[in-house]
Amino acid sequence: QVQLVESGGGLVQPGGSLRLSCAASRSIVRFYRMGWYRQAPGKQRERVARIKNGGSTDYADSVKDRFTISRDNAKNTVYLQMNSLKPEDTAVYYCAAEPLPTNTGAPDYWGQGTQVTVSS
Image 1 (cartoon, one colour):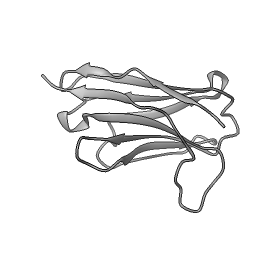
Image 2 (cartoon, rainbow, N blue to C red; image 1 turned 180 degrees about the vertical axis):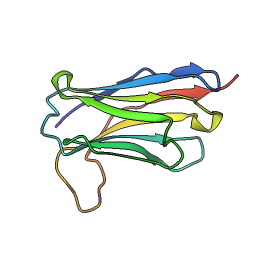
Image 3 (spheres, rainbow, N blue to C red; image 1 turned 45 degrees about the vertical axis):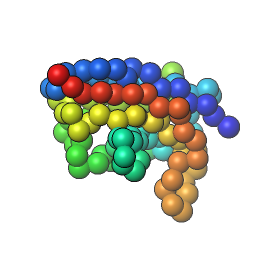
């Protein structure tokens, strides 16, 4: 079991930046993969970015070159740096953990989410 707590969300103007943090209740150093997902009103949850324990990353096309995922295993924390934010980035952002590889690639653990609103 692991608890995930997100922070860093808020209201930001278009073109602005935010950094989200996800603190895990125990060590994530051996976790296969950590990720960020988001869900906008009336839409399905979508994958934003993921990072494996070896450091390799993947991003949704909509956030490539604007968002950066990173992990600090010593602090049991995963980050999402979001730059050049757009109104369409408005959503609840969720942190997720995959301690071991799964057939579906679906995370086993989820945080409660943090709201990001991009508006002028």
